[in-house]
Length: 255
Image (tube, rainbow, N blue to C red; front, side, top):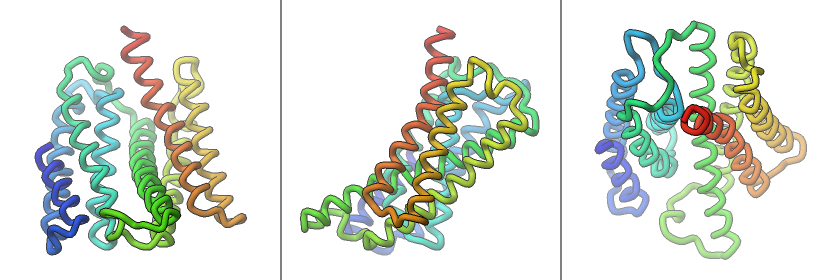
């Protein structure tokens, strides 16, 4: 948590222009935080009886994966403005791992199910970064319309570059989500069972929103405002699909 929070402070200071030669420091802090986060996840969810999944472990895996993607991407592309959102969320996802009663009891994870879980985590992480990018693009778009670029937004790339990066993230996230859904239909026996049917339906709906956006971009030239709205709508549906349903299953129905 400390590494994430220190990295967040460095990011904010870098964006405000208080420090300029901090890219290497930020990279070291980010990778160190991600490594410590991975170790924390391993020690808390991997047991002799199997893997302990659930709401908080999965949330922490998603944020940790997102932080790792941001840290690695920063090696070849400036994306620190996204880390200003991702790093604090990753820090906040760590304390719930210490709650002994969070998540399901540990159980062995079959290879097919492991593939489905891994692809789902990657898809959620990439699409979460896309949602963060769309929020920043929304702020930039509104400031451009008002004619005044204020604060840290002045150091952001042009809106066309931000938009291009958003669609790159959306393509990657949609492909990963497609692969995760296919793996789920192949390997998960109860994907359409009553307990998880709503999760499947909402995930398909979120996937349809992302695919519609990408098709609209390719064939109709949809731009920033439409992209922002559909990206956020798709991500909200995706969050409700898993985390909302897990909250109900673990802490309301079981409670």
